[in-house]
Image (cartoon, rainbow, N blue to C red; front, side, top):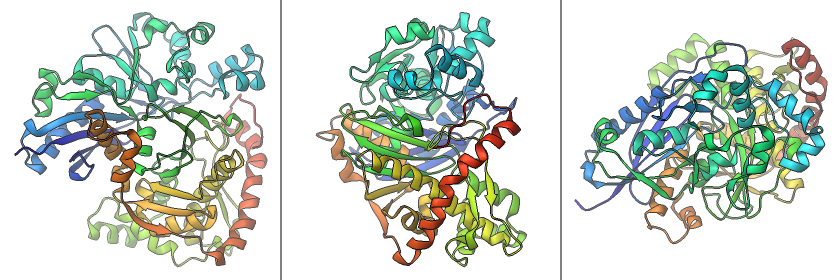
Length: 520
């Protein structure tokens, strides 16, 4: 057989998704391998990088077995990793501590100190385009430098998830453009390290890896890695990318002004733009796209689908759990809950939910804000609470959409990816609340892995330009706003926007945060 295939990995928070595709991004086989997250202290979240590699090797073998292709037909490989992670390694690439992942906010103290040192929020906004929080890379690096000086002294390079996997696959320590773009010390125009700013921050650049393009072949699969994966040595491996840029590629929203939403454990709104634009007040920043000529405006909400999973884990009935088990799909419980939500009137009898279960990054940046059900009364049932969760997540996205629209990016059509994009009821709620046309893509949960696979194909010269990859992405269904729901949702959205200003001070007191609390 002469046909060529690509293996790509979307290495997320809960596990790694592997897909084997043809050069057009069509899935031949896929596999998901989970791994745990540890929370050793409040606000901490860590993972063992050996778990990432184990998931990658096991899932690679599984997709090869499922597809029954000859390993020699694999023409390229790429990794798309969760972003904002920090992993110090020694000269041999051995991790010196567990990886500090994106959701970890231990570095609030370092963030507050940076804000004070650089003259306050306004000065930092002008200098860096955003105000740092305890979840940002530079703050996490400074935390290691201050709290674990022996680890920092022994650190050869600080890698992110994608960089660590590229190293395990090729033996080369690099960071791709998109990973470097979220460190806060990358010059967007030249895509090089900002030496002056790094010096001001106290971060030695010799501990940062070399920056490579996402679509550059940065090495070949080593014999050792190939044996673990069941592949032939010498397979080209690209620089890879963060999960958000990979998902942007897999959504097909690649032209200037194109936007997509992601509904997974977390959520985000991303807009492709020719020039970077930061909306720091709302936690929206621009980072390098996997497309060498483009940037991505990213507004990330920390808990989107996690809110629904929290409900499923704690409040799904025995009948609902049995029905989900009968259907045999690990995601079936959410389809069962969809059927419950469809029977509840839009607006959930004026019950509101704020989807901030683990703090928030955008549309407001606040590590101590938490969720609340507001206006709960004796008239409400469990089913109203469930619908309010779907709608609360949608209101949060509407806030993000309004913010980028005010900045000149109306995004009248939004692509949708992630597990939530499988839900017709949630997609319709999203369309009704945001008043945008929503295009749910085919294979939405594989969008990141497919996007990474398409980037590999682009690196191998199978497409004329990066934006040509848009032609390979299919839409499964389009959702138009229902005008009958607009008045109710408009009123409730207006109230939702006021809730943060009323809750942030209380949550800060309850959760002992130190950062400033400003209503968005």
